[in-house]
Length: 109
Image (cartoon, rainbow, N blue to C red; front, side, top):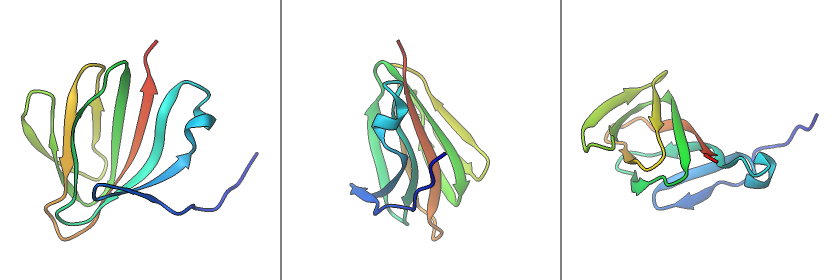
């Protein structure tokens, strides 16, 4: 068993991304397992997942999730967003409260 302290997050665009485990610790099975924070006005821009599935588990706050078909849905704590291989998505925070979620990206073989 290993216990590690929180590391300094990476800032990508406006997203604060703190890896729960490093990519190497996913043993070739995935690209990300992270705690993500979006302050008001911040966004994870539209992107497509080829050869991988992405899950967002919303921890707190309220976000606007853009699905593969372009529809926008409000997401709140307890919601799970599933992005299947070949689909795109985006998420943004328009609320005062910071939007926090877990992002898990797994490779499809």
